[in-house]
Length: 271
Image (tube, rainbow, N blue to C red; front, side, top):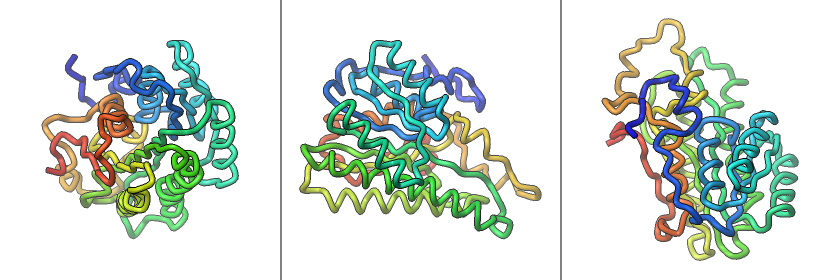
C-alpha cells in the first residue's frame, strides 16, 4: 500500500501504513522503547512486540504508555507500560531494573523520545533550550547508561532516533539541531567504545515524519517559510511505521555488521 504522505494523516499516526512484520525476528529478546506512547516510539514498540520481543513501553504520559502496551498484549505479544521521565536518573534506573525483573535481560534499546520546536535563536529561552537538551541528549544518555550492563552481559543493540536536524542545518532549530547533533556523536562514541564487547550502537535519522512532534513545529513570527523548503522532498512525509522498520532492521541480526551507522530515512533530503 502506498503511504498517504500528507501531514496529519491519522493512519500514519496509528502506525499502520507500511507496517511489515517479520514474525519471530525478536523472539527471546527484551526491548526498551522510549517515547512509546505515540508516533515513531509507538510504531517501534508495536513492531518489536509483533516480532516476538517482550517490550517495555516508556513514555512521560502514563495513559499513552499503558495504551500501547495493551495494544501489543491484545495482539498476542508481551508488554508493560511505564510512566517515566527519562531526564530523571532515579526514575530511569527503577524502570530498567523493573523491566529486567519482569522480562529478563534487556537486549534491545530504542531511544525514540524527543522534543523540539521552531524559534528564532535570539528568542529561544534558556529554559526551553535546556529542556530540549535534557530530553533529547540527557534522556538518551541515561537510558543507555542504565541498560548497558544488561547489554554487555551477552550482547545487545542500542538504536537512537536522531533526525536530519542532527546531520544538516535547519533554520529556527538551533536547540533541536544542537541536541540531535550531540546524539549523533554519542551514538558513534558508544559504538567505538563497545565495538569488542558485543554491543552495537546505531542511529536512524528521519526527515519529515507524520507524528505529534511534527504537528507541534510552528514557524515563529516573522520567519521566512522559504528557508524550510529544503526540508521537504517530493516524497513528502513518511509514516512512523516506515521509521520503525529501519529501527527494527538495525536492532536485528540482519544488521550484525552495522555499528556506528546513521541510517537516513528522509526521502533523499540529505542526499
